[in-house]
Structure formats: C-alpha cells, structure tokens
Length: 282
Ligand code: AMP
Image (cartoon, rainbow, N blue to C red; front, side, top):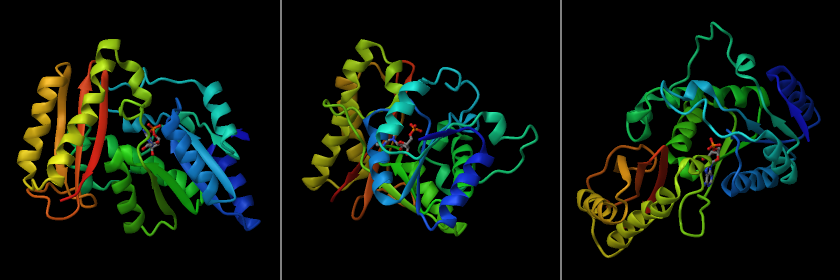
C-alpha cells in the first residue's frame, strides 16, 4: 500500500491504473477507523481491481465551533487497517494541498441539505460535496462506497452524481453497530461512561417506532412522539438535535408512512453528536 499525500500523486497513480484497464474503487473517510469503516473497505476491495481509501479530516465540512481540532486521529493504526483490507493507496492530503488560499468553488445540493443535519450544520454538506467531487475527479473511480449511518450524506452524493453526470457508481453499506446497538462512530470516544451507557437508547427508540409502524401506526407525528417518549424515560442525558420522518431519497418531511420512509435523528450526548436512522415499513 502506498501512502500518498498530494492530489497530483493520486491523480497520476489512478491515471496509470485506468490506462492499464484497471477499475478503481474509492472509500472516502475521515479516519479513526472502526468496524463500520472496515465494512466499507471490504466492499470497496470486492468491487474493483484497485482501491483508494482517502483519510482527510476535511476542514470545509466543519462549521465554526465544531470539533475540527479535536477530531480523533491515529494515522499509524488507520494505515495498518487500510493495508489489512487491501487498499492500494491511502490518500492522506494536507488541507493546503486540497484548498488553495483563494479557493472559491463550491458544489452544493441545497434542496437536500436544508433539513436534518443541514439545519444545525449549514455549511457541512457543501464541504462534503466539494471534497467528494474532488476525490471523484482525482481518482476517476468507477465506484465509491459510503455508509448508511450518514443517510443524508449518501442521498446528497447520489443526487450530486446524477445531476452532474459524474461517471461513478455509489454503493452503500449498512450501519455497523456495537453489540448493544449503538451505531459505530469515531465520535463515540467523546462520551463519558455515563453518556455511553445511555447511548444505545437512541437506537432502541428508533426500533420502538419501527415496531409501532409494523403494527399499523402510520402517523409520522405519533411515531415521533413515541420515540421522544422513550428517550425522555431512558435517555435523560440526551439533547435532541432533530428527529424527523422523511422520504429516503428526496429527504422531504412526511406526514404519514404509506410508502418508503426513513426516521433519522441526531442526539447530543455531552460532547458527542450522534446520528442514527431506520427505515420504517408500513
Ligand atoms: P467518517 O470517517 O465518519 O467521515 O465516515 C466515512 C464513511 O464511513 C462514511 O461513508 C460513513 O457513512 C461511513 N460510516 C461511518 N460510520 C459508519 C458505521 N457505523 N457503519 C457503516 N459506515 C459508517
């Protein structure tokens, strides 16, 4: 596995692979790997002859006052994990090499970024789209792999790819979880033991909504109330960022769940802001 740190080196290596007729998969990450990232690498490895894993704590997707400086990092361990999963390149750029001081070009999908995480993180998806499109252009990847834990992110990237005719296929992997159901996240390390003990209730609340939906409840408002009730009882340390029922592709809020529906949430537990989501079946 090569560790490359400049966009020029990455582009040259990928150009050589494409010239040799080799297919390329891309797994974009911010590092501090857990088993969720590893499942994406496994998938990326199986989907193409060459795999690029990128590790970049992208400054433009963090707003003022967010955890850019505190974001956990461990390059040595991450490199060993990427190597173990068969990455051909681990791309670890410096921010200066990705963004010129007078960088002025942005890619946005405002229609899909206005709800859910976009409400409390107004510049987040603009930063994500811009850096992910850069990675698509540098690698010319045939396929890129994202996680369903960040549902809104993959929905926005799918839309960007479709709207801009980017010749890359988007694949998603199910959310990797701790045995108690908590969605794996690099940010889970921010929690105190007390917060960590309550964190699985996020998922249990969503599962409660799914059970009610399966029993026939179709009102998004009532399903939401049920989850908030569960959290009020079992997750007293949690502070709600949002809990919404939306269409899984358009991300438009739904009043009822006659068809495809996604319940998505962000909950703050101490310093951690934790995401989860669940598909509801009527
Ligand atoms: P991150 O490093 O957190 O920016 O995430 C990099 C990629 O891993 C994104 O596509 C995420 O959706 C995905 N990912 C993060 N957490 C999980 C998880 N628990 N299960 C599956 N994929 C995940």
